[in-house]
Image (tube, rainbow, N blue to C red; front, side, top):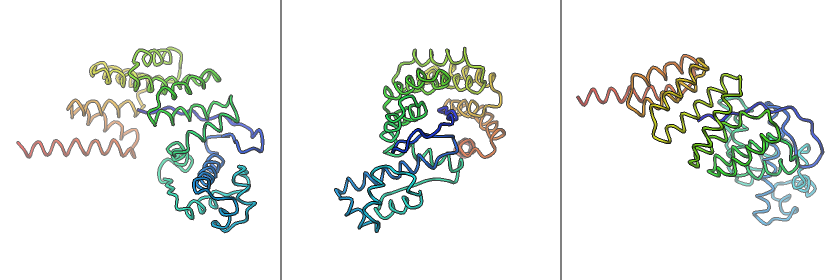
Length: 289
């Protein structure tokens, strides 16, 4: 199920401390550099090294390690930090082949084991900064910590009333907890107040997800239909309805939906894979007959 993310507001740096703020959706250098420094620092601590021992291993001066532990990000480049991570034998995978560098690096940041402590530190430095709150909420959700995710989404919306789209994220966490009434309520309130067609469509898709979890397939199909009616060019609605049709063995309907996804998004590899799987299954059934 898609999790909505809103382009963050531009912010100024408020201090020269270790805590930094996100400035725009394209400004990924600072948070990634911050996270790399955190990972190197944690590895040095894990090995029980002094700053002098770490400096000797990495081939730098002791003051350089002091800068690292104090979080002086302006004194480090991502290239240098990645080199250190390699020297320390730590695994680092960053996929830049899809979605653009910014999106890929943010995805890597959110999937990192350090994501939650990283965002927690950001929140401590800026208690009214909402982006770190909802990003930590996403990280909690990904790790199955749904109640904590709900708390972060709720707090972010309390701080900034313009973030009502986070009701979708919160509803998805409610669904995972089996709290379907709360999930439906969030979706209904968003549908009633948001003029944005794609956000309303996402709310209907989330309602459909809840209906499926309750075993109500026909009701879920109806919800997908409402999403498509609200936003006819919203590929996600066709994709998720296609998956439900496929699960219900309604192959022709599933093919129609996945084909529509590809019309809207020609490079959608997931829809292409589903189409291929359905057609292979149909061929195998014909051979068996």
